[in-house]
Length: 289
Image (tube, rainbow, N blue to C red):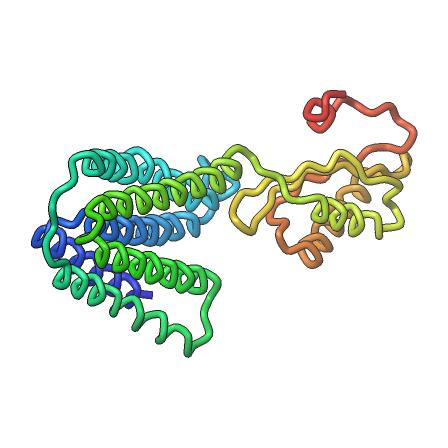
């Protein structure tokens, strides 16, 4: 969506010009808000390209988590740099506010900065969008609402000068919230986030469909990309089954899983003999057995 980048760039430029011409803090706040969106788009675009790289000797499970790393870096940067500095400046101006004059020109510039965003929202509303484009359109609408709130703040700045600083603080909190959300959503994946219980039920159900399988246990799954899972599981079979038969069974189980549970990209399937005492597995260590 190159037109979205262009719309953000035009909007960002207009807001920066407005700030340097008229000094309203809410204009630089909205400019930084647009900048965070541009940075997120750029980082996710670059990291998504990296995540598409095939597995290699140093990354045997692929590069699927590159996008999460990029988003985590963006989240930390927003909180530690943009949000903090904007919040600090807002608080400072709250107690040492400037006296503003007619805000009409600043309001007109702010409204002008919303035009490119509005055009993209209207344009994308007429075509079928990919999931990431739907998310971007949602973010564009949020930015327009935030911009209209800034226009309202500018309108009352002549009566209540502190409202400019208050609006900037609100935008700083919004940026911080976005950063915290990025950190939370991506850090848990990088720490080995596991799918929900429904995923485990589906895996156990598929494996249990094979008549050779007596039991399915010790299933562990972690995300290796937003839609790819690495699966480790144990199946119990008749103790007299040969190694070749067991090997063939695991291949058939994996093929069925790949078809019916498409999130499974990698799988390690351990075959256990029925009636044999179980060894202590990784699963046992996790659940504390």
